[in-house]
Length: 112
Ligand SMILES: [Zn+2]
Image (cartoon, rainbow, N blue to C red; front, side, top):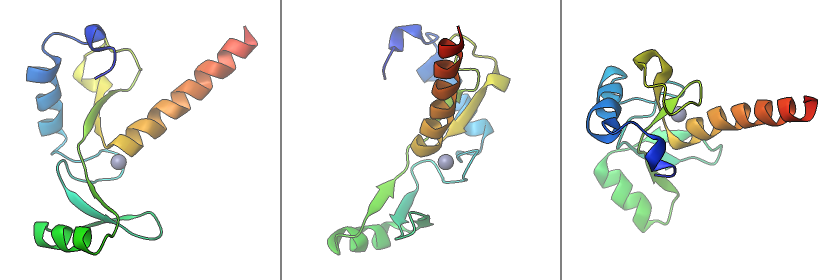
């Protein structure tokens, strides 16, 4: 994890697991499941598959993904660990979330 020192000391042991549990181990934006196995379809959409299908897809050299959810800070302040500020997101939704934030940050920098 980058910037690990910025995170609360209980982040990995308490806060992160509690948020994942609260959110039912699902990405709150797109609904993919924590540790879920997915086939990446041609459209880019994910299709949930079971372990056997996953192994089969790997053998067939199809594109597959195992999802590990991340817990995002909605206000992008890693010190604000209020549970309302935290949300379980899959890596691609987390990236989208941050991208919007970074664009806003960049824009406001230009303005100043
Ligand atoms: Zn997602």
